Image 1 (cartoon, rainbow, N blue to C red):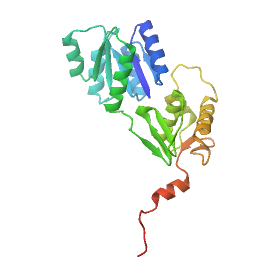
Image 2: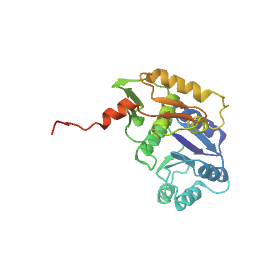
Image 3: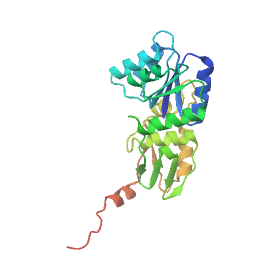
Image 4: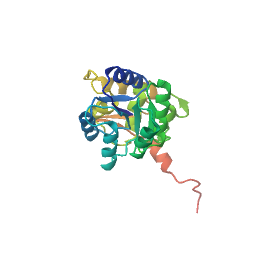
Length: 237
């Protein structure tokens, strides 16, 4: 899941980026309205954490413009302004939640997950590919009913592939959507993590197929697909 943090305070930005990354999110940062607009135009985000007090246009103006343009990404306002009138204004302009600084990081994470569950970009409760079952909100993965322990990054990579079953996803796209912007790119980091996934998911049969020159595709093996397609209770006529 990719989040955009819009805040101009370096200490707050570093705190949010580090904390949210440790929670398994890919985090982009914009320090003013212009950068925030450019980021939203270039990238689809699952949630925006938006400070109200920004240089130039404030967070309220940004929220109003995004909603007018049809952007439905959940927005969580973060601000030191705790007046009831400000909270009401933010919600009426299209914000989804409002958290006053200073705040407990655990509460921020809980609110982020709550917005993702009910927001326009909320993850599916369960994704099934053959005998592989992914429950994103619970961070739970099983295959053949057996639980599989994955790191946050491995789960992000698997979920991204699983949301596009049978579709070839390029290495560049996987890197862009799963790894945090600004990280030092490693030429084979995607390949390395796919290998980790294959080893943990099991290769009998392998659910992740390499497409030379294209990328990777996650799909149920033919035998599993055929078995699921068989009619139930088919007796003789």
